[in-house]
Image 1 (cartoon, one colour):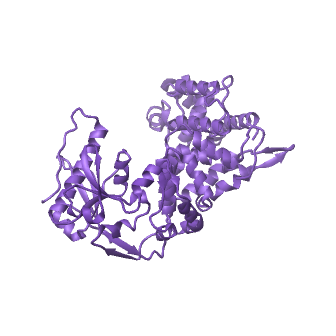
Image 2: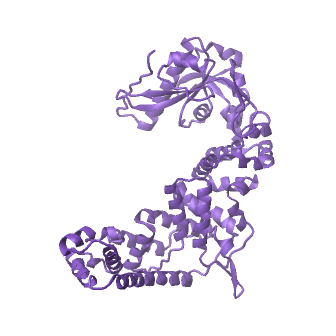
Length: 516
């Protein structure tokens, strides 16, 4: 067969369900083609687990007795660019666009893991049991084949039916039983599995959070014993697992589990500084407990907002002071932003994600009071945090409230703030939104290009923030003529004076309203 070329029409069917059927049909076609060339071939790993649980697999992996070069003879469009026996097989639609990439991997065993990550030696095998025994957890160590696969009998495969399709399941380590018991259990000796790849410890916790499974006691004890080896794992891989834990349906339980198993001290040690630190009379929990509960009750599905909820008070231990017998945490949001920046940089987050998390932590103490919040103050808030972050900032505030034991998540003040944000969302909050710019000032007023133009625009913005009705081209150009008579130093002082005064006002309100 020259290439794997699949054409399916979605028509009026439920798109997601039908896509799953398509992907499964493609995978089964590949199994058939491999078997037709006298090799063994099985679906394996997470896709088998998900199908057995009635979930939608994210991908379909295939394991086979065929060597990589033998797979490429069957599927010339495949790519083999690694040392682990995995051929990547792109599946294309009629337009030639790749819609799916299947991983087809030769049976293998592995030995030696000096770096706690990669095997020192990979040996291609001819028997499926050798391949399954190297896998991480029992629920991921099952394989499934079509009735036509003649090798099924030697592996003790049992007949099962999924979506009216007959399969044969190879389950050498009790994965199906552990699915029914809702247990994450390592294959074989847990310590050995974690020595092979220390990231499997985080994966165990991640699967527990994603599937809502308990951890088998021996597997949990092995994680505690081997926790220190996580430091050998690349920070990018740790970051990816942390994101998956936080994105799961049980993120707070995941963080608790990281703490119980001693992994948290190597991943987010800064959080543990608040483990035994009590707060002031506004809080009934320690800083760490409050942070974990804030994550638990965060209404947002975005992992960046959830991470900000976990980190929002991470600056409190460093900012804690005793004043008149009361614990205070003045400016903890700014200290927390700096600590959060170090964390996201250490874990190799992208610049965009890092900036979003740090921005939310820095601004989570924004002041709001329905009787005092004005349109101008909301415009300043939008200018400060960005319009795209407002909903996330409110979700973070809700998480903070609920994590403090407050029963009412969305008080009138927050609802009023949302109303005000909606009301002023089209008002100017940056120089770019002014009705005049440097080009207009040069063209219509014959101004000379230079730093004075930027200084004038800053002054205009400061005034428009207070009164958006001034954002009119004629009005602003008239104002420009007046400001152009001032020298550069005067203009900068005027802009700085206006903007800084508003900032000081906001800071005074924060310290007055929030005794932290």
